[in-house]
Image (cartoon, rainbow over all chains, first blue to last red; front, side, top):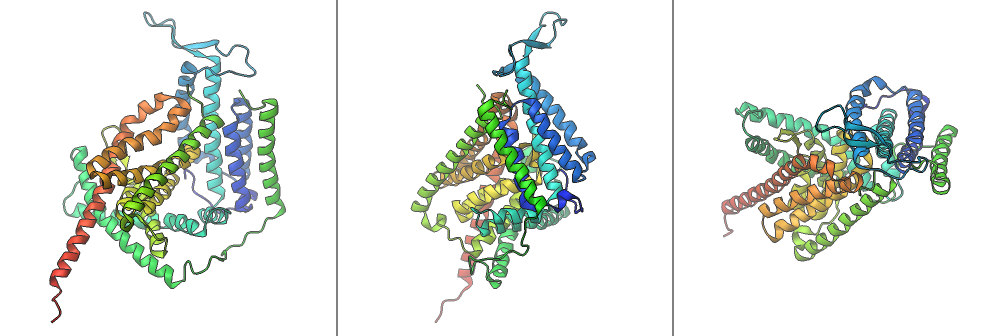
Amino acid sequence: MIVEYESKQTPIHKLDPRAKFIWLVATIVISIIWTDPVYLLGLGLVTVIIGCIGQFPWAKMKGTFMFLLIVTVVITLIQGATYVPKVVWLANPERVAFHLIPGWIPMIGPAWPVRIGGLIYGLSMALKVFVVLITISVFGYVTSPSEVVQIIVRLPFVSYKSGFVVSAASKFVPVIQIQLATLRDAERSKGVDFDSGSFTEKVKKTSSMLVPLFANALSMADTMALAMESRAFGYSKNFTMIRPYQMRVSDRLMVIFSVGGLVASIVCLAVFKLGAL
Amino acid sequence: MPLGQGALGLGVSYVLAVCYLLLMRLLGGVLSNQYPEEHSVVWDTRTISRVTILAAVAGAGAMIKIPGPATTIALDAAAGYFAAAYFGWPVGATVAAIGTFLANALGGFASWFPMVPIYMCAMAFTVTLGVFVAKKTNVIFAIIVGTIVNTVTCLGPWVIMIGPALMIALLPSQLIGSAVNAAVGLTVAQALRTAQKEGKREIDEHIEPEA
């Protein structure tokens, strides 16, 4: 995650993780189905407001936003120069806004016309990326990783074993990283320089480190299986949750707001073409 | 003509992902029928713990960076190939899918979140196909096929959505990354299997026959 979870006492932090997850899914789906940049801007604004209520640290996103801004400007220009969609509310989407190579450049200009329709389409694509980025970042900031796993485990079509695998694997990543660091140090102590040599040599050096890593991992898996069996893992399908969640009024309001918004946006798009280019 | 990053483009990409899963199931079925000892898996506690740890290795592998000629390469898919070759395709496909999810989650997947399920299906299919080809021919051919298929399956949805421009730009880094991951995963599995066999043989030689 770009912004790590922080435990705070904001109204958004206090929400039931299921309500926050429904909001996340609804926002992503709406951002996918809408193609009008004005509507996407509105959706982004709502997400920003929710982030502000959750005291989201916007300053931490500065670097990501700057990088993404460059990428999205490139995407917008490429879309503008190469693709012209039909725009419901625009009379002539093929109208040229400007040329990527302006007319004052002798011999080659003007060339690569950027058309209004394509530019608007590119802008909406860029906004989609921003909305999804902000939504997931806000969700990651207000929801702890263990809560995310609790949501996965509670999904009706997901077996608790799958939830366990995702949960335990995410917790083992730092352990594997420590092992990797130890193996790298061991290789360095033998005189291996990971930064020197050709690409093939670098791959060979890294691969030599991976054989003991995988061997260690298999040994760890066996130990873990013993620990799981000693706790009767898989004995019964009727399992219980450590943290039982209960929906409060604010959680229900969030669910109604999210699901209602999603349904309304789908109906308005299908019937009145609201939100479509 | 590209279908865009809207519902249509993503919908078609998800259909493509379902096709990956169907193909994976088809190839996996053939492997399970023809090589039941290697590719039929019982989902007991030991298998679950192996999937868990190898998925964690895939997640941590995303942080192993090798500076390459086109871009920096992460070893996030190697664990999937390893698991498929060492424990059978069902374990490999599961490790590849969960490992891809973890690697993307740890890498800050916010901007391409809707694409992650497609990548998960693509990786599960690729490792199954890789191990299928390795079984039918040899490891070198499996690496070549795995590289091409991984590149096509991961970049294919982008071509559907925004056209071939991005695919052309990402092609060199994706090809090299796929090749390195396939090569590392499959060769490490082969090395460990050989070491295991050698170890067993040495133990057998040291055991004295009963009088």
